[in-house]
Image (cartoon, rainbow, N blue to C red):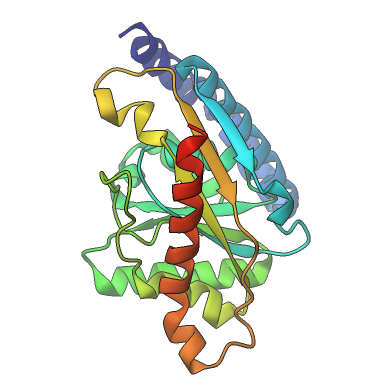
Length: 244
């Protein structure tokens, strides 16, 4: 239990003591929005590295060379744990907004930091609100901000098989013309969910697949895109089981 206690203390301290930083970031955003995007991302990455250090999580990363560094993309990943966002935020290239569940939006300081790094909060039970989030994400892509989404819609407790991907998530790519980067996450639930409420050391394998262009896809390819990406991630996921 010592790790979870230390983690809770550190998170509370960061969210409290970083309030002056939020003010500085707000001022910076008025002067230079792009500089704010970079600095906020650097701060959040640093904070998440501290979190992983406390949890004792080891991350093996494969395929980082597949992440485009000169353009925005849509990251599509499988979802097992609350730690999926924390782990991936450390390795994404450039400003990236995650689409997270609406409940996270209720934590004041955390909400502000997540908004600073362009995160969006989706209520999957509200179709109208979900569509607004998708449209905003499309605008972000066009502005050069990458988006990361978990199209399974919720955390998957099945370690072997991915759930069906919600097709609406892929509109972010097809409507903006950006590439899709498949992301496989193995064993992230071993950090926390498997032995809730304790935290244990775990070895997580994170793999970024080759970008999939969507700009010139025909109707059939667009229709098949969610399943194509799901199958790609499923294959990576199965291959990485041996690495964990």
